[in-house]
Image (cartoon, rainbow, N blue to C red; front, side, top):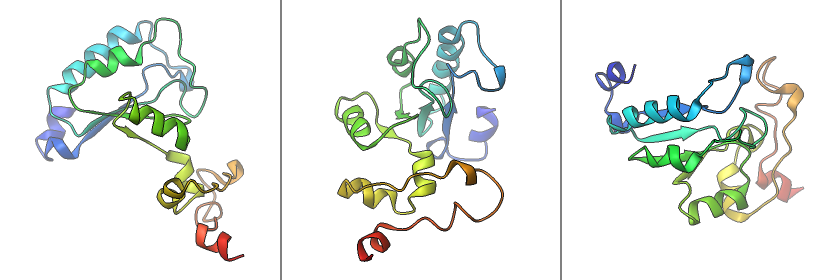
Amino acid sequence: MLEALVGVLPPGRIGLRLSPFSNVNDVADSDPMATFGYAIERASDFGLAYLHLVEGQTSGSRDLPPGADLKALRARFKGAYMANNGYDRDLALRAVEAGVADLVAFGKAFISNPDLVERLRRDAALNELDQDTLYGGGAKGYTDYPTLRTVEAA
């Protein structure tokens, strides 16, 4: 798959997201360290922009199973590492400052905070995500969260 992608796009414009320890939809690997370690090492040879790992369960706990070692997986990739799963501002800053991550993904927080970057920059309160409107149904929950400017003006 990566061979096909780098045949069309520059590798520095491609990122790879993997979920080595997540068992969403009852999918699990009996030896994720070996399987994903090999895959990450091979992917590293392509010169990708970043490796993005879901740390723990997709949209769930950050807890890792016994034997899981994110640092060991990360060490097998030569490029930038994007951390993911349940990060808030403080955890993200600590991860980057400690060199544990080069980048941090904020998925759902962007949905409920259209100005997330500014809120993180200013350490401002975040809008709470309305789970009932998440991923489907219409514009509600995607276009109606207040911006920081709106909140401050009220």
